[in-house]
Image (cartoon, rainbow, N blue to C red; front, top):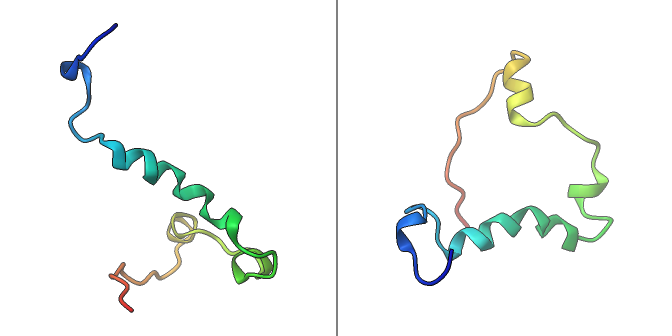
Length: 63
């Protein structure tokens, strides 16, 4: 493969995808005393759902 070959690219992938995949590393910038690290571990949403927990619907966050 060489040169400009737009036909082999996925239409939904853009340079924004590169930034989004790094979002998983954001917590590494938090202090060790931040609640993200210091609070006790809790089950994640899918685990709570499969366990039969009553979950609230998702909603947009606003400041």
